[in-house]
Image (cartoon, rainbow, N blue to C red):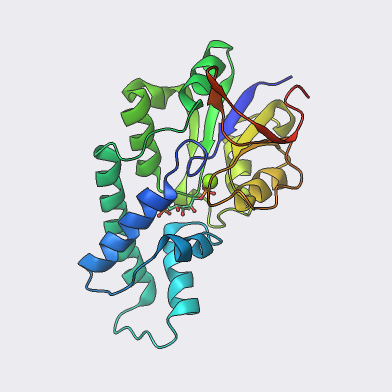
Length: 236
Ligand code: XBP
Ligand code: MG
């Protein structure tokens, strides 16, 4: 019997990457005097690595062969990433990143049906709480019994650790839950934790491999603009 829904955040609840995280990374780079420019296309490639700090490190190691630093790289990245989070929160505050179609309805109707709700994401905790409180109201945070986010587990998605951590905190079995994801890294993580998974695609993830998904949709949709099933059986 279905008892709980566990949601990814970036790409699933809101289209946060291209016009959110990417812009914030670039703002932090500019402020630090770096001439790095993460174009939408380059960012699509960098998304193969989840976690902002991990993504910056990957970029430095794979794309900047002769980048030299006086200071410790881990500290440098951590400071740069703190500023990135600051700029990202500013973007959220400006209202630039709405929830995707159908997300609010899905969360509210799940609550009404008595389902337990949780979050499992790689992003920084403040980013999640701010997105939820600014779009669904402050009280909405309390609707989620567990918000598993950021560095709470060292191995980020595609590792299953973040989902396993959430399941453990909820003291619930994977069979009683359903995960919602938007990306290949996300579904690898959720399937790794033995969770049935529903995918909602976006521009960055539409060509990802979603083998193992219970259902692949283009969006959650609204009654007047319903979702399209890309793969699977919506009634199954
Ligand atoms: C989300 C991410 C995150 C965000 C940036 O992946 O990969 O890295 O892009 O967030 P998922 P931070 O949707 O699979 O959880 O900079 O706060 O890490
Ligand atoms: Mg995602």
